[in-house]
Length: 108
Image (cartoon, rainbow, N blue to C red; front, side, top):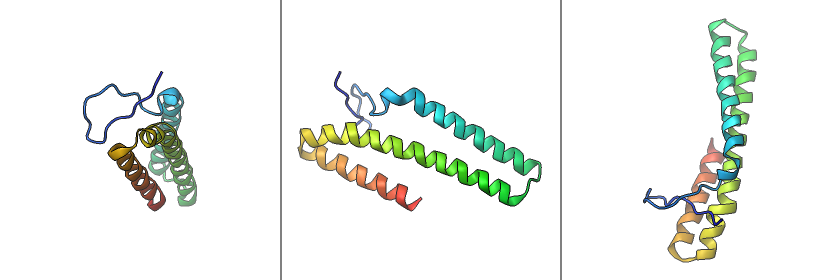
Protein backbone atom coordinates (compact mmCIF):
# COMPACT_ATOMS: atom_id res chain seq x y z
CA UNK A 1 0.00 0.00 0.00
CA UNK A 2 1.42 3.36 -1.01
CA UNK A 3 1.52 5.99 1.70
CA UNK A 4 0.67 9.55 0.89
CA UNK A 5 1.00 12.57 3.09
CA UNK A 6 -1.28 15.50 3.69
CA UNK A 7 -0.81 18.53 1.53
CA UNK A 8 0.34 21.55 3.54
CA UNK A 9 -2.72 23.52 2.47
CA UNK A 10 -5.05 20.86 3.90
CA UNK A 11 -6.48 19.95 0.50
CA UNK A 12 -8.89 17.05 0.54
CA UNK A 13 -7.17 13.91 -0.72
CA UNK A 14 -6.71 10.34 0.43
CA UNK A 15 -4.17 10.74 3.20
CA UNK A 16 -2.24 8.16 5.14
CA UNK A 17 0.12 9.91 7.57
CA UNK A 18 3.68 8.66 7.79
CA UNK A 19 3.04 7.61 11.40
CA UNK A 20 -0.01 5.46 10.59
CA UNK A 21 1.93 2.23 11.20
CA UNK A 22 2.94 3.40 14.69
CA UNK A 23 -0.19 5.36 15.59
CA UNK A 24 -1.03 3.13 18.55
CA UNK A 25 2.46 3.42 19.98
CA UNK A 26 2.48 7.18 19.48
CA UNK A 27 -0.85 7.53 21.26
CA UNK A 28 0.38 5.33 24.11
CA UNK A 29 3.47 7.51 24.52
CA UNK A 30 1.33 10.65 24.52
CA UNK A 31 -1.00 9.19 27.13
CA UNK A 32 2.02 8.45 29.29
CA UNK A 33 3.16 12.08 28.93
CA UNK A 34 -0.36 13.21 29.76
CA UNK A 35 -0.17 11.17 32.96
CA UNK A 36 3.20 12.71 33.77
CA UNK A 37 1.79 16.20 33.38
CA UNK A 38 -1.18 15.38 35.61
CA UNK A 39 1.31 14.05 38.16
CA UNK A 40 3.25 17.31 38.00
CA UNK A 41 0.05 19.25 38.65
CA UNK A 42 -0.64 17.03 41.69
CA UNK A 43 2.89 17.64 42.94
CA UNK A 44 2.32 21.39 42.78
CA UNK A 45 -1.09 21.06 44.44
CA UNK A 46 0.62 19.11 47.25
CA UNK A 47 3.41 21.68 47.60
CA UNK A 48 6.15 19.22 46.68
CA UNK A 49 9.80 20.27 46.70
CA UNK A 50 10.67 22.50 43.70
CA UNK A 51 13.56 20.36 42.50
CA UNK A 52 11.39 17.23 42.50
CA UNK A 53 8.78 19.05 40.41
CA UNK A 54 11.47 20.31 38.02
CA UNK A 55 12.82 16.79 37.65
CA UNK A 56 9.39 15.58 36.57
CA UNK A 57 8.96 18.54 34.19
CA UNK A 58 12.28 17.60 32.61
CA UNK A 59 11.17 13.98 32.22
CA UNK A 60 7.89 15.01 30.57
CA UNK A 61 9.74 17.40 28.26
CA UNK A 62 12.15 14.65 27.19
CA UNK A 63 9.24 12.28 26.58
CA UNK A 64 7.52 14.84 24.33
CA UNK A 65 10.78 15.43 22.49
CA UNK A 66 11.04 11.68 21.88
CA UNK A 67 7.54 11.68 20.36
CA UNK A 68 8.45 14.66 18.19
CA UNK A 69 11.64 13.02 16.94
CA UNK A 70 9.79 9.81 16.17
CA UNK A 71 7.16 11.72 14.20
CA UNK A 72 9.88 13.62 12.37
CA UNK A 73 11.67 10.37 11.46
CA UNK A 74 8.45 8.92 10.11
CA UNK A 75 7.68 12.11 8.18
CA UNK A 76 11.12 12.07 6.59
CA UNK A 77 10.92 8.36 5.79
CA UNK A 78 7.52 8.58 4.14
CA UNK A 79 6.33 12.04 3.16
CA UNK A 80 9.68 13.57 2.28
CA UNK A 81 11.04 10.47 0.54
CA UNK A 82 7.86 10.22 -1.57
CA UNK A 83 7.98 13.94 -2.41
CA UNK A 84 11.65 13.77 -3.40
CA UNK A 85 10.87 10.81 -5.66
CA UNK A 86 7.99 12.77 -7.22
CA UNK A 87 10.17 15.84 -7.70
CA UNK A 88 9.03 19.30 -8.67
CA UNK A 89 7.31 21.79 -6.40
CA UNK A 90 6.08 19.08 -4.01
CA UNK A 91 9.68 18.08 -3.33
CA UNK A 92 10.70 21.65 -2.58
CA UNK A 93 7.68 22.20 -0.33
CA UNK A 94 8.23 19.03 1.70
CA UNK A 95 11.94 19.75 2.12
CA UNK A 96 11.17 23.30 3.32
CA UNK A 97 8.53 21.94 5.74
CA UNK A 98 10.98 19.39 7.13
CA UNK A 99 13.69 22.02 7.53
CA UNK A 100 11.29 24.36 9.34
CA UNK A 101 10.10 21.53 11.63
CA UNK A 102 13.70 20.64 12.51
CA UNK A 103 14.44 24.30 13.24
CA UNK A 104 11.42 24.49 15.59
CA UNK A 105 12.54 21.36 17.42
CA UNK A 106 16.08 22.65 17.81
CA UNK A 107 14.83 25.97 19.20
CA UNK A 108 12.46 24.34 21.68
